[in-house]
Length: 277
Image (cartoon, rainbow, N blue to C red; front, top):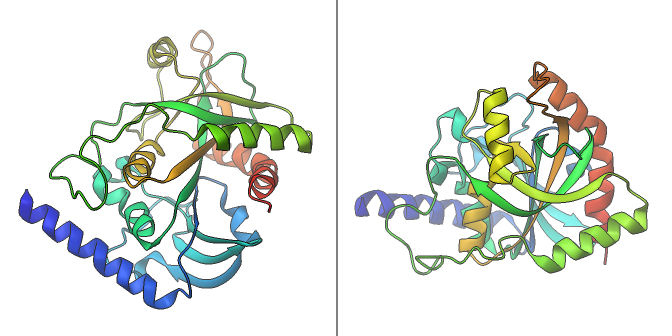
């Protein structure tokens, strides 16, 4: 295990060194752009665009709706690094592997992370197309990216997650949504499941009973690593559909992506306003 962690550390440091040589200055803001939400990348004044395959030891994105490239540049006056496409546990990666880019970019200098995803609504008060600002999460992915020996220079052995999602960023996001006149902006609890199969009616009831408002297959591992590294975190889900366990309709991934893309412009406007200096 110690040898595995030493090899992992070496791979992370090689990727950090590679990106440091290609970036004029470190990013302040890390953007993780999930399913159907890569449109925010069009607003970045790009200085460096790298396919994941060009970066040492980066995993390969296998999901069709994920572009698989790193963009470094400016969003307004803010230095950003955007991951256009993420990795998932259901693709066969361990959570340590799929959070590799977050670890690398935290060491490159990022201090804040914004993570987005498409999610299925569990709260019956939500409507398709809602934006849910995460105030907490439940992790049902059977792995933790911090499992194994801890590297103390990267973060504490037992990171505190009592305020995982930054209260000031949540308040600012809600205020910006009101300023922009955006409707259907909620707050709630996100639950991460392994996937790739979608929820049965019984599982939907179970997840609701746990206190979750929306369900997805990503985000939580990245957030755990970001908090371990000391980053402030803002999470936003696009609620693409709402699951009714008493009248469950087929959940089709193409419909989820299409609904997410229809809502993406609202999310882009919101994030641009939140980080508008």
